Image (tube, rainbow, N blue to C red; front, side, top):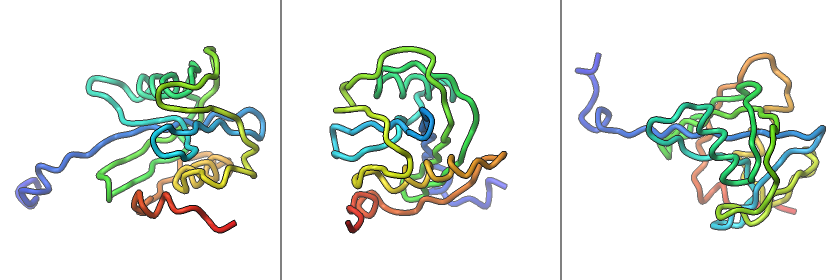
Length: 155
């Protein structure tokens, strides 16, 4: 089967990333990124030699100061424009202290139905998917470019 792949396809690098949905009742935790001034779910790329669970725990701690445990997979999101697959998990807090970090200027819980205007659209969709309460994970394409993602919605 690999004979059918073009040289470019054989050398393509696929990134695996994780994001965490941390709810407190009807409120969802978001982190305000220092680099782009947008609210997002805690998460990021997996590192070599790391398990999915280790990546989730590390990313959440780096961005929020919290220690979490994974409860369940909510969605698998394909981002072909970035050669990335994002695994999104519902998590529960096990410890730590909510704080600003090197990566996040502020971390705060928001009512899930009233998110800040500058919440990344892809992350809004992941929150909406979590609220569906489906017994199985959703599988979605998220094809918008970073530029499209960072356009503020109309007021």
